[in-house]
Length: 264
Length: 375
Image (cartoon, rainbow over all chains, first blue to last red):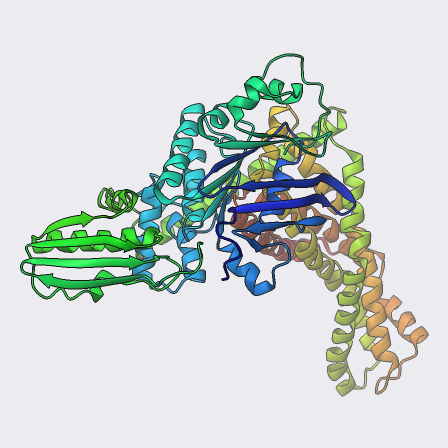
């Protein structure tokens, strides 16, 4: 690992063009996420939020542009460097994406088993710690099918946190949760950031969470194929020049005229 | 991730009754870090002080170290003090102390014989009821179909027919040809001993048309199509697609199960006939070659003396029944599947096993029935 400059941002996107094959979903997206920041990627359905996330975490190769983590290029990284960079971040998928044939203990322990030299006892301790951190102490031997949706997300978060990554991505964390559970998850996110200084990137369109948690947001738009606003969500709500941004953040005004697209 | 890093360290020093542990460097759980067991902890000191003045970055590994130190102090009766330590690390370590008791897990161990037999019997009874229910629902669906009330889509059925019929021709052909070859080879060993080389045509013809043709086609389709049905329906169940149909008021039996069973029922007789023909060709190819040297025309003429239309009919009748059974087994296991990735895999396996079991049982029943009827 080499130092590039004094403090490169946690994540830097430069002219990232995202899409699938010939189809371009987002063009020339550039922004930076600071360290220990809670950063939201917001926008209406079909604007490319999840597509952007898939490109950021390397599930989809970008058509052009680059993603850098802590100054290191992820897009053009060699296989070894890429493997190393993958440990920089954890991802909480929308449904938790727990491996259904494993208990919660095994789900959280697997990254530790595969990617660290910890012995069995130490792994058990980390698993217990991570599950306690997300409030699931005592559920080690449950299978994903035996717990509720909110618990699945928390277990997924425990797994994402297993290697103490510097960055954690959340894909629609509120989806499918009741407001109270969703609020508790938000509190957990804040606590993780405050305790460990983790950088948090959340893809969401849940206004309550955005105003409650976000330090900064970028808003994507389907028609613009890119970012239409960036900054503090409260300021954007009250003072953005763009009507689309104000409308989205105030969630009022004319009925939605945006073209319907695939759910993001 | 802030390079360059100093390795994690913990140095202990005994000062009077106080064990002072200086913690320093960057603690990463993915890298080597000191454990509490490495500390010189032979005598119980009055106080243990963890000093984090030289600490760089840290994560859960430090929390684990603090927790180990704290619980050691509790067992030794020493006072435990954190100095210049990040607040979060102590808090994180505290989480482990609050760990609630594990809930009761399922009892492990081997159940007694009586319990095992009982459980299996109950399971078998439940499965039989379940399968009977599906058969009943399919019967009602057929009734609805003839009254024009079923939500049956011919388009789906035709696609399934293509999948299980035309697309299966190469593999069914290959296997049937090889079965014909094997039968001819094995049979020739016996018939040549009696100088009855020509009877090989009778033997292969009868075996293929009455038994092997329908059976081979059925076994290939059980593995190819039955498993695919179970996986498709199992996946649909896991994704709540079947629930979505049910809440629309669309019967999953009419919409998903019937097109598949009908497709298999219609296609299996044709596949069996095809399998018969290719199997006979396999036998013919071996008979034509040395050492038998039977010309194809002679082989064909001899075969016709023993294989008649009733033999072909019994094969075709059985094939239709096998088609029904494969479709039922596949759809049944798919609808029964657990809502998980593993559940879908188990359903596919169970579908193949069930289908083959049902095929063999049905074949035995047919053999007895045809014998009684004199077919």
